Amino acid sequence: MSKRLDPGQYEKIQQLVGASVAAEDRAALERSYQDYRSAMDQLRDRFERAQRTAAAREPRHE
Image (cartoon, rainbow, N blue to C red):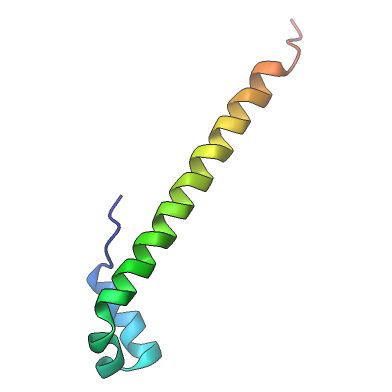
């Protein structure tokens, strides 16, 4: 999964903050998005691991 803003995401940011602010702060926006994606990826991994662990502990009814 890409950790960079795609053109559509960048366009939305431009609409929110204005083109000049988005252009001036693009590096900071990219870093913030990278931090966000990393945190979301870690959260997803931990959640999936917890689900697998819980499923392995469930008693099997056969």
